[in-house]
Length: 248
Image (cartoon, rainbow, N blue to C red; front, side, top):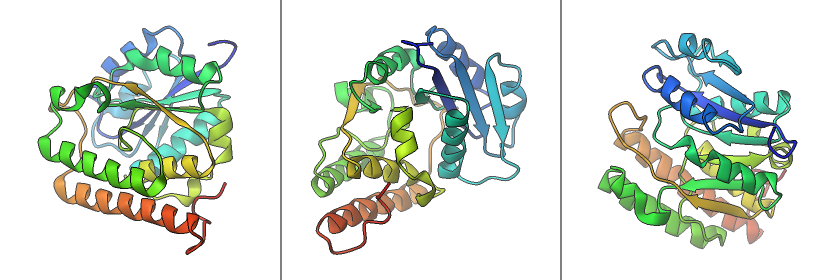
């Protein structure tokens, strides 16, 4: 327990057999995590089998592939059911270092913030870590547009390294969101709509063969979804459309 609060790390997994154990070992080496939850979105490899060998780990396997957003919905639901007070999402592909878990948990556990993001942009780690230049440019453009439309000042909206308080996760309705990759973006916009401040910490990342990534065509679809979500946020603020998507 961290400050008498249960810390749960969730891992939305798909074909993560090559990196799951390495990620898990570093997560548990931080000595503050009480439980890990792995949700396997119908992988084609041995992700679930490996996950079931890990101590203090709850494993849930989708019978068919539902998508990244649907995977997260299951992760957060299970984390709340297991009594998590601080819930941290770490991708099991080892792209994000679990060494930031204590820092992110302390910001939540000491009631400073209800949402903390591990930013690849702060500190200039994205390109150093091997992020493709086209993805970096797209990230910068999307983030600028989203900040203008939402009024926030985030360094990026697209990181998969995130920490949340139980209170926050219980307040927002994740079921309204997409089952695809744009779920990440929709969730942050819901949090901003609810009036929460989103904190960020600088996070080094690694891009390598086993690290998960989406292809160019899906990235374009994701980018358009992000812009549409931010535009709807602005239009809802102006009273031009219903705010139902963002309401808790």
